[in-house]
Image 1 (spheres, rainbow, N blue to C red):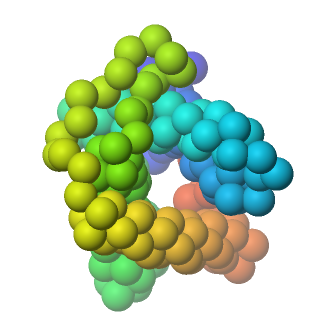
Image 2 (tube, rainbow, N blue to C red):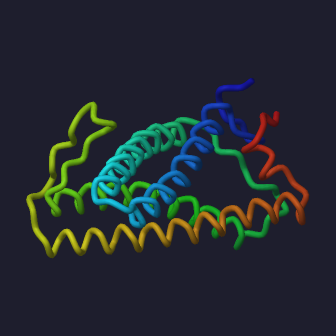
Length: 182
């Protein structure tokens, strides 16, 4: 089982980071929806506290993933992939990265502006980057929601493209993120 990526596929750290982050992002959507439909204020606060903790975890894992991406070879798309698809794939990947970083940042700023502390699973509290400010709280909350919808749409495009490669193009693009390909 290879640690490093190759031109043909991803090593186990890249695959693990990808799938753990995917699972945590799905958990984020579930936690946010549960919090918004909570029956009590206390339940809502607990669910949003978990949402914030998971968001901080995603942020940390994405820093590791980005570092890993820069120190590793990136598997290439099949040679027969048209140039316009290559550009869309590259743009989509970088937009996904940007949104995955923007979401916890807007969440942290929105919480600080709303005067709600952010802790990581109750272990430590993240210092507020800004003071309470209702207008900024509304702005960051709105941006957070817009970015979440954009992330969902781009992730859907990403999944559909992977399925297209697997079922229509019949290449290894999807398989290389699932198992080791040499």
